Length: 188
Image 1 (cartoon, rainbow, N blue to C red):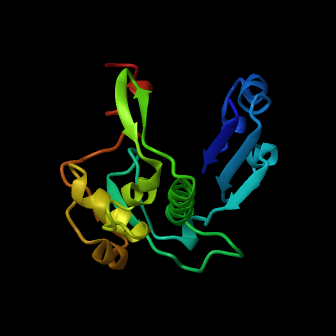
Image 2: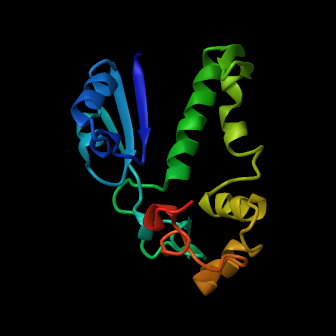
């Protein structure tokens, strides 16, 4: 392996076998890039750290199995320094990949993914990432998730942002409650 890209995770610290994982994941890579809001262990091993906005510096959704609510996160303050949200950082990477593939006249390739042949055209990376220009920022991504996800209230991200939180209908309890969670009750 030559390169590793770690996005918004601290895998080097999250594993019980951290030292073994770090050895195999990091010491065999030539170049490591991490997109992270904090300087965790993964970032410390990285050659490049692209600063990512924290929760209160971004527009996003929060939906967890522990609570029966959909929460809209609004950018309360602008990101510090050169930090941007994950979507924008990845858009910039997709734009650079598309541009370089065109400059270098990279032709589409056939790749194998899970036993299937997939055609990859790196000149179209940005077009695919933005769904042909329909998704242009993290608010658009949030709206796409709301529209496409079964069981989530159909609401505009703007309305969700104003309300802050909405109940997910049909969910009477959460995985954290004793009566629902087999890990707590030990009953299946």
